[in-house]
Image (cartoon, rainbow, N blue to C red):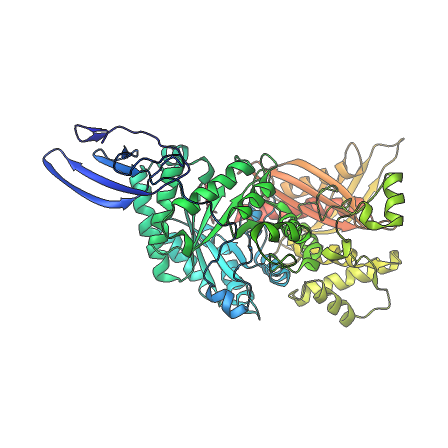
Amino acid sequence: SVCANSKCVERRVYGRRMSHVTVVKSSSSSSSSTSETALSSSSSSSTAAPAAASTAVSKTGQAGTSITTTNSGSNSSLRRDVFPKPSRHDIETKRDPQRVKVFDTTLRDGEQSPGATLNQEEKLIIARQLAKLGVDVIEAGFPIASEGDFAAVKSIARTVGNLDDPPIICGLARALKKDIERCHEAVKHAAFPRIHTFIATSDVHMEHKLRMSREQVLASTTEMVSYARSLCDDVEFSAEDATRSEHEFLFEVYSRAIEAGATTINVPDTVGFTTPAEMGELIRGIRENVRGIEDVTISVHGHDDLGMAVANFMAAIENGCRQVECTVNGIGERAGNASLEELAMAMYVRRSHYNKMLGRDENRLLTNINHEEIYASSRMVSNLTGMLVQPNKAIVGANAFAHESGIHQDGILKNRLTYEIMDARSIGLNKNTLVLGKHSGRHAFRSRLKELGYGEIHEDELNRAFIKFKELADKKKDITDLDLESIVGDEFKNVSGREGGVRLEGVQVITGDRVLPSATVSVTLPSGDTKVGTSIGTGPVDAAFKAVHQLLVDAGLPVDVKLEEYIVQSVTAGIDALGEINVRVRDNQNNRVVSGSASNTDIVVASTQAFLNALNRVILANSSQETRVHPQRG
């Protein structure tokens, strides 16, 4: 033992092998000790007898506690494939229990992207599309964050969670009883509910954020996972910032979580810090050293700060991970999350490679994902969040299947396999075709929207969207699915249409290289009064923005904002294409970024509407007395 005067000196032990550990609690007034099984670490090259190789290790926390580790020598290498026990969800939905489960957190972590706030109706529509996509788990939100979040998770659990072949509906909860209870209340209505609880395990998080010792974190893990399991049979536990946590302590935290009833243990790379080699080694270490690991699913969660999130996940899969936590288009805080479409297609296109590595049938599918719904899911999330997909984004970017080089074009014309490793049709990219015209009726319009995933649109929104469709059909000959998605997306993002916001009535501009650009804007205020304002600017868009802003300020509405981003792109090709505008403004009152978007064949009108949509969201947020809780920052 390295304890002196009943106080332990910390010694870190690093190695590949862990075996038996005894926690010894000493007392200066008594020579008696109490032992319990805990964690240990040893070198894989060690051949010494366990008793001779005994080493005591203590963890930061209460004095008089030491963790004694025992080397057990080298074991045979782990099997690549794992054989988890089929869950109730696997059995009742007839999904392959050995698949890699896809845990989608677009509606929770993805929504934490600056400006990507979704309302309940938008979340429900995306959740239905995710179920159609075939994800195994939908993390629908953080129920204790706000009443709106709770209502959205509950609504998704009641509807999407009870579809035919439904996904698991999951809610996030900190390791606190109030969070866990609130989460259970929201998800319990699903056929397959899950509580996902977490606590930080890295030294920097425990010291500066939690202000808890290691013993306190271990005790909280046991208590809160046990409590969650008493409410719900499916409990996932995450060790926040796992990749920066000391491995021996991390292994013990996971062991305690499994003993308390966790059915999935998640390994988050919270700050996108790790590398593929390190991730693979950590997963191997968990499989070798965590008690009861053979009875649970190992999951990974990661951010893309260093651009390695997807590579890290693939390394984790190679070493025994069987659940990946990701988002559509890779949206999320900072640099975003691991991208669902990239992971799904990597496992589909290279399934022969991974199946061979795992000792499985060469053509066996590794996930439950319906690949032909990938592009539609990407478009929907982009439309409803206002988060544009970069043109060179893998799988779903506009250039993903484009070829500019003459050499490439020649090869593609001769045989597409020369420069394409996947067919665009495999992700559903074959829908940019004429579907409706100006003679199409309302029933046909609604039927097509339903096919595109917008079946839950409200009647008043459908009516407004249909009017916009008819207006567009008079201006644009060929109406495509992309046009329809943009039209209906506008209705969801137009806060003034359904929540008593400020409504744009008209905009007129004068501009040119020989005149001072000016704009006249007419709006209807929540009171019902119509106001008209005029302003000049550096261009027609700037003038319109200034006119709108001044009208709202004069009406006494809380709109102290700064324009941070303005993006214009065409929805389809052609001179008559819809112009899609995305703006981001920073609300100076609470330093929050809010987005707004709109589309129109006239980009000045679209710009003015997008800006007003963003301001309406600011007004709505500032008029609410509700304080939103962040899962990491509290």
